[in-house]
Length: 82
Image (cartoon, rainbow, N blue to C red):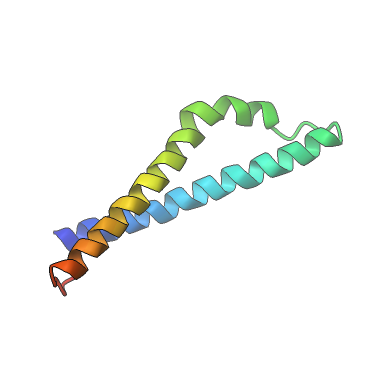
């Protein structure tokens, strides 16, 4: 059960990482587009910042900490099943 949970957690963190990277590249491209007076979705990105991207970054950080703690606990208590 613990192994499946950690596998699921790692998979979810990878998906979340790609969402965060996508949002970063979208922001970078939209800011460059704004400097050339092109509309590349910067206003939409700003509207999605609070409800989508901020929680995604928070979940990524919390998940990374949780994954690190779980790994540390497995090493500390000698569990070789994970």
